[in-house]
Each structure stands twice: as structure tokens, then as C-alpha cells.
Length: 241
Ligand code: SAM
Image (cartoon, rainbow, N blue to C red; front, side):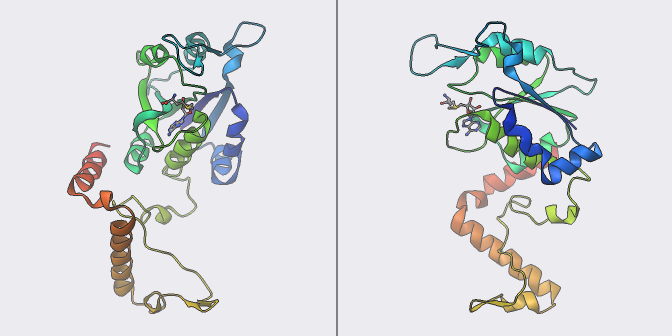
């Protein structure tokens, strides 16, 4: 998978050299291209923002550098998907991550200030599949951290990314539930005992315990995930992918 990441703070993406993402780059599974948006400015101050039309606080990212930057992306026959992180976007979920993991080429446009002039996104839809995505109902300073979260959630679904692909199967959000609590050795730590069923060797009993604890945890922490419509949504998205 090819990733192009555009930002005025490209150093954020140094993190993609670490851990499993770094290994995936070395093996060629991920082909990462990080770009400084200011390379597409033409004035002495390398300006990327201006005051908002209609007034209001803050600045808006100018369309010209963004337009030229996105024009520079080579698009292969498989096409490319432009991801624009924004708190005003559709919710980024595990189902969306699964969908994105089927793409060959993802491009990330990281906004700052009050965001990117909307015409950039509208115009880009002539060349890209465009997705405006929110990583949660809160506001970050810029799209870099959101893009890193999306990249990592997508990349770990690529065949060959995880050392043990089995780790992906029972994770939170994969079957619509939060994962049951996990434990490792020692069996007794500071007076706290590991649930005895996990030491029993009875795989059926362990699977039932994990499912029951996953259900209980989901009901307590994320009852919204248990609504019939939520289960149906996740099923429909998975079938569509
Ligand atoms: N004025 C924008 C609004 O109210 O929707 C918020 C702009 S925010 C300060 C600057 C940038 O951070 C956004 O353009 C976006 O790239 C990123 N960002 C902030 N919160 C985000 C979120 N929850 N999900 C994805 N991106 C986010």
C-alpha cells in the first residue's frame, strides 16, 4: 500500500519509522511518502493560511498550495483515496479501517487552524475517492495525529503486517463487542488472582467466559454498540467491503 501524507508538520510522521510500521516499510508492504505542504507555496513567508471569508476567529488553509500539492500525487490505475481528517467528518470505525485496507493508495491531507478551504476537497473529488473522517467527538490541533491513528488502524489489517495475524481476530470492534479483559503470568500478583477459568485448560469454558465478559463490558461501557441497528450497520459494511 502506498501512503502520501501532506502536512505543515511532516515530522509528526517520523513515528511511521518505528515498530511494526517501520518493519512494514523495510519489507516494502508500506510505501510511505511524507510531504511538507509549504513546498507548494511561492511567497517568501511560505504562507499556507489566510483569514476566513464571512469573518470569524482563526485562519483557513489556502486552496492554492493544497491544489498544487494534491496535483503532484501520481495516481496509478487502481486509483487513490484522499482522506481528509476533520471533526466534521464521518466517524472512523473498524469497519471503515477494513474498507480502507483494501485500497492500494491512501493520501492524507492534514488540516491545521480552522481547516482547509472546502473547494480543495470538492475539487479533489474529480481525481480521488474522497473521505472526510473524524477520529472522535473532540477537537485536535491538526490532522496529523488523526492521520497517524487512521494509518495505523488500516496498516495493521494488511496481510503480513502483524507478526501473528491471529491477534486481529478477537479484538475489540471486530465482532461488534469490546474485548474481554486479558491477563498474563504470574497467576497471583499483589493479591490479585487471574480468573481461575483461564488456568483451567478448558477451551470451551474459556471461550464462553470471554464472550460473557465481552458482552458485560460492552453493555457497561458502550451500550450503543449493542443496539440492533449498530450490529446491522457493522454487518452491512463488512458485506460491502
Ligand atoms: N474548525 C474545525 C471544526 O470546528 O470542525 C476544527 C479545526 S481543528 C482545530 C484543525 C484540524 O485538526 C482539522 O482541520 C482536522 O484536520 C484536525 N482534527 C481536529 N479534530 C479532529 C478529529 N476529531 N478528527 C479528525 N481530524 C481532526
